[in-house]
Image (cartoon, rainbow, N blue to C red; front, side, top):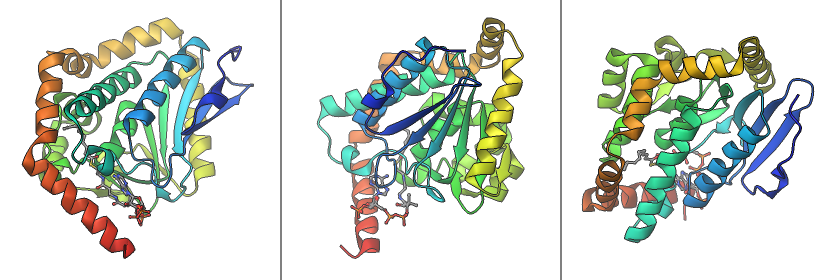
Length: 269
Ligand SMILES: CC/C=C\CC/C=C/CC(=O)SCCNC(=O)CCNC(=O)[C@H](O)C(C)(C)COP(=O)(O)OP(=O)(O)OC[C@H]1O[C@@H](n2cnc3c(N)ncnc32)[C@H](O)[C@@H]1OP(=O)(O)O
């Protein structure tokens, strides 16, 4: 059983709950109001993965504090609207390194998607090995609707998860899928009626993974995920520069502006 050394109370945007019997860490995302991903949040999540690795967690479950509302609303609109060039570079680099690290963790990973997971909100579930959804939520990579071309590593994660034909249709149409539809195409592996049941299913998946030798399992995981990991590692500097310049482009900035206005109007402010 892992001896928990790290001080998990230092984290601002996650709550980490260890099960001392099975060594599984449940990480609840709690950055109000909608778990949108900022540079600070991504930095924290990356550091958390390292702590969990050092403490030899036997498995990781991600879920959200904002139950039946939102798992994550994706990249933070407000932070990405008119950022400085340095901030845009830092943001893209943090997103890349966190997603890479999560995709090749030694320990098995599950996302309990207990709310909407649009666009960048779908990244954590896609990097995980298994996804359990609740009813009545939307999930998908709808970035094309924002004028954002997906980084190659993100398309590759989607292809790995739902196959190339489904991924082509999903990405090119910018579709957000209902939970039932997500189940049909394999974007989620199971649907659960409540978060409690979803957490039980997640634990069952992680317990199954435990019977296998840890380092052998990691070798197999890296082998099976090689096409994704190659995309993460391919020409990193160029890829980051491309994403930064896309983000800073007038077209994407105008689209972010429009979406921020829509959200404001929705709230009547
Ligand atoms: C360059 C390539 C790099 C990377 C590739 C990946 C790219 C990803 C692009 C993105 O991820 S862009 C973000 C896409 N996300 C969305 O379109 C989601 C937008 N939000 C919603 O649809 C809804 O807010 C919700 C379904 C998540 C939740 O709905 P509801 O519960 O009704 O809450 P409200 O809409 O009233 O929102 C509450 C509060 O939260 C703010 N907010 C919502 N989404 C974001 C966000 N993505 N970033 C920042 N803030 C967000 C919203 O403005 C409200 O704020 P108040 O101040 O009015 O309380």
